[in-house]
Image 1 (cartoon, rainbow, N blue to C red):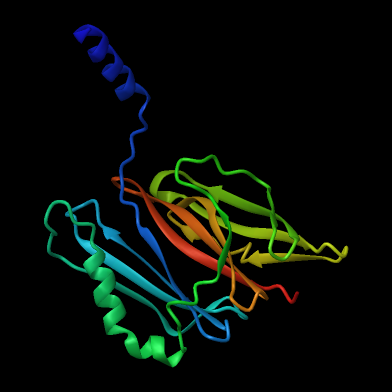
Image 2 (image 1 turned 180 degrees about the horizontal axis):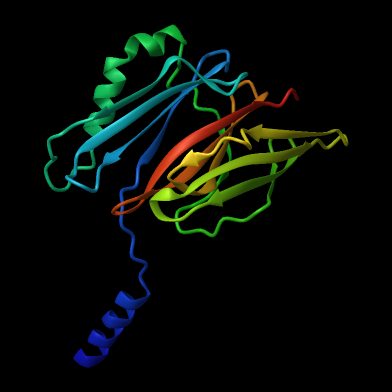
Length: 230
């Protein structure tokens, strides 16, 4: 029996993927009451030195751009105690930017409705097709990406094609993102969530980025937004 257990453990060690790098945690911090602005954050621990960090963003949904001073970052030099996850950096960066949150009238309770969510460990598909049973709309979403180079020298771009059709037969198509903009150090993108704004006239696409690093691959997040109009 002991030999069987040891052999099973050996097989598990072989098949388990080896991941080196740090993975940020995404936080939906809500829309403004008129759904014109969206606030989100990410936080975690740097793999090198276990330093806590947090990034805070506010995006204007109509233009798909950061607001003025809507891109904040905070990294601490000291290491945290074992068993902690760096969430203190998130609390601190939110506290430091209360005035920015109030300026854009962000409501932390107004987080929208998730239409699509790619679970951790699930295989991403392209295109993604799904139905919103509340509005009875059908969605087809495809992420097109292009990467050149290898290792730390990789750079890549992407954009999203989305088609929405209603039960009445109306169809609209959108191209979201910046196809010509190459991000240095990013090797791959995934759509993690698609969020419908509270006014139900805008979409937020949560994009996972795999960033090449000297220690492996870091996971970070960004968003793309679009006004759907119906």
